Image (cartoon, rainbow, N blue to C red; front, side, top):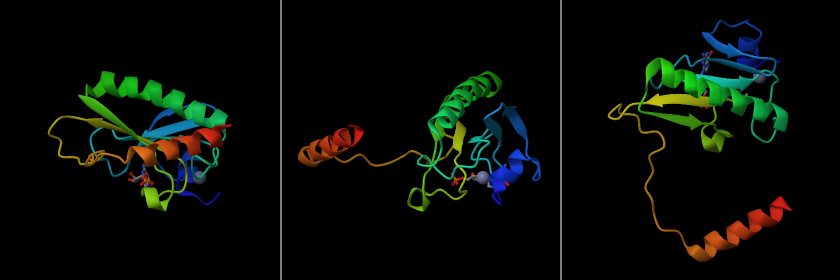
Length: 137
Ligand code: 5GP
Ligand code: ZN
């Protein structure tokens, strides 16, 4: 597969690896938002949340849980953002599913996950909730 993250898994492109198991690979982001910015990916290529198998997503989640603990132990951040973007509209750039682990310190100047809260129209919120519940059936 001609995908930059598949090449990293195959070690055709170098990376600073921090974790690997039979399903998952994790490495430092080359453009870190903060010290310790990690990417956790499935070894099997899947572009996004709709393509990845449930088993691989569970494996990525489990590795993310372990790695967040290691980041806390190693760097003692005051917080951690987990981010996982799907599709260009959601700002996904690399088309191989990845979870970002971004250690945070107050006053670090990052603006990720900062948005204005505005009161929702509760009729619309409720109707959309019903639509999603029906789609779960
Ligand atoms: P996205 O916007 O798709 O969620 O983020 C992709 C991330 O992959 C970016 O944070 C970018 O810095 C990182 N990235 C892109 N190419 C490489 C690479 O070759 N090596 C590493 N380590 N990270 C990369
Ligand atoms: Zn890939």
